[in-house]
Structure formats: C-alpha cells, structure tokens
Amino acid sequence: MANSLMTTYKRLPVTFERGEGAWLWDTQGRRYLDAMAGIAVCGLGHAHPGIREALCDQAGSLLHTSNIYGIANQEKLGDRLCALASMDRVFFANSGAEANEAAIKIARLYGNKKGVKNPAIIVMDQSFHGRTLATLSATGNRKVQAGFEPLVQGFVRIPYNDVEAITEIAQHSNNVVAVLVEPVQGEGGINIPDADYLNRIREICDRHQWLMMLDEIQTGIGRTGRLFSHQHNGILPDVMTLAKGLGNGMPIGACLARGAAAEIFAPGNHGSTFGGNPLACRVALTVLDLLESQQLTERAAHLGQRMLAGFRSKLDGRQGVVAIRVSGLMVGIEVDRPCAELVTRALDQGLLINVTADKVIRLLPPLIISDAECDDIIDRVCALIDGFL
Image (cartoon, rainbow, N blue to C red; front, side, top):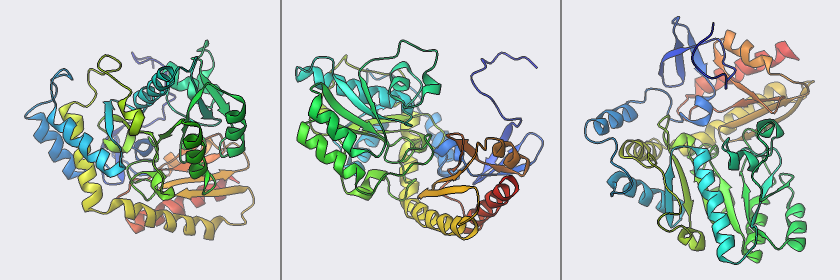
C-alpha cells in the first residue's frame, strides 16, 4: 500500500503504540521484549516516569527560544557533561551525525589554523559516523556511500584495531590532523579492539599534535559499563561526540572538546536552530540524574557479564557460531553465514533484535532490564540460533 513517506527504510511489519520498561506493545496488543532500545537510545527503557515528568514540566514552561539568547538548561547540561567527561566546552546539536559534523569541522579548522594545507582525518574500515555527506564519507561502509559521489575529501581510511597502520601514515603524511574512531564499533558488528588500542592512539596523537576524536554516540551514556567507554582505558580524547542514549528518545547530540580543540570555534563558525533547546537539555539532565541515582552504568557492566556468561554457556563450541563479543550492554554474536532473516523470526517470537554486518546478531537492550529479562533475552536468542544453524 502506497503512502506519503519516502522509501528510505525497509520497515518491519509492526507498528508500536506504547511501551513500558523493556517492553513494547503493537497496535494489535501483542507484547515484545525490546533487546534493541531503539538502537541504543532508550537506555532508561520506555515511558520512564522520570522522563515523562521532565518532558511535561518543561513543555509547560518553555520549549524553544533560539541560540541567540542564553539557555539555562543548556548551560546546566554543558557544565554537567564537561565535569563528568573532564572536557572544557560543548556544542549541542540534534543528532549523532550533527555532533560528528561539528567534530569534523573542528579538526579541519584546527588544521587550517596550524597552516596545514588540505587537512585530513584518519578514519576506520567498518566504522559508522552518520549519513550526512561528510559523515558518510568518514564512514567505513561502501553501502552507505554508493550513489552519493563525489564524496567529501579529506579522510584517510585504515583497518580498525591496526595501530601500525596509523604509525605508517604518521611517518609518510604531513597533512593528517586528527583520528576519528569508535571505542567499540557498533554498526560494524560490535567489534571490540585490543585493550591498549585507544591508549596507543592517544600516544600517537600526542606525539604528532593530532586531535584524538572519539565517536561515543553508541558506546556513551553508560552502555559499556562506564559513563563513556574510553574511561575503561583511563585516557581523555580531545573531542568526543554523544547522542542516542543522552536523550532517551528526545533528539539531542553533543560534541565535547578540551584544550586547543575547545577554543577552535568562534561566533559564526557553527550553529544550530534547534540544538540544545530547553526541552532536549532538560530531558538529558534527567537522564544523567537517573543514571546516577539508579546506578545504571554499574548495572550495565553487571548485565554484560551475565550475558557473556549466559551466551558462552549455551553457545561455546556450537558449530556455526564464530564469536561472542560483549562490552557492557553491547552484544554481538557472529555466525558463519548471513542471518538477516533472524530479525523477522525474532519478531514473530515477540523479541526485537538486529543483525548488522550481515552475520552479527546485535543486542542493545535497555540498561534497566531485570536479571530475569536478561536471561529471557539469552534464552530466546539461543533458541533462534539453534533453529537457524
């Protein structure tokens, strides 16, 4: 049946009308266990009473004024995020792609101010940074780029988790100014790098005065068991981008910077009509409050270990299972063949999952799931795999 929407999505045959916690109900009244959280967005689950109260209260006072005026909630959120991340300044946008656009512009302006002609940014194969022209050019996935040529220039692509490739570029290039990398690749298949990968990138960036820029749009806001994933490594980036879980469904993105990177933008260099409006910032402040008061970051670490143990006990040695990769509540189970059909099979069983990189079952459940719901996800996914392989 034709409708007015552009065909940019291959939608599943279901429409949801309400949710509560880790559960969704469709228009037919059928219940589903949500192991995707809107693709790592609804970390607090659906219809959280604290989020609802913040939305209603703020909507009753002020939604939007414009960034040509001071915005109290934006200043509060900026101070809070900078304190939590040990960063100096933040720019607020509406999405992860926009946050990454800001990071890319910071890197280019940083290079130009240093006298670097045609500044370049090192990016990774299998990465995903967004679908604007600049961010899809930075993305390491040919499928999202095809047909949109000419792509934006200024990106040098190398394999993920390959420090030697970065070192090689450093020895032969004089126009690189930054490295843009995900601490864990989400869309690429829950690819977890070596334990010292980020630390070694930090050392290289320091040595060559490059900006280390971390895309924490999927990994941030508690998902990997720390508020920001790079905190597992005890390092600080120069630039960090956030979105997804920061608003729990309210569109918001953030580009944080410190040191020289924080002083790059001047009035007129960048902007956003809606970015950091009173409503979005009020919700994000509430998200941070609830993460802390309910200890959900620590909870994500606990649940990740529970999932890892559960999947290993059921799938280790199982023919056709290639790898089980877990970082907090980012879970990837790689099998030896394309498995996109499992998404529909799971839907039929009342479970929401995702398949990425063709062969990886990706799970990104809400941080508020119970132990029983965690075990339910494990049992259902393993049953799907048993029926497929």
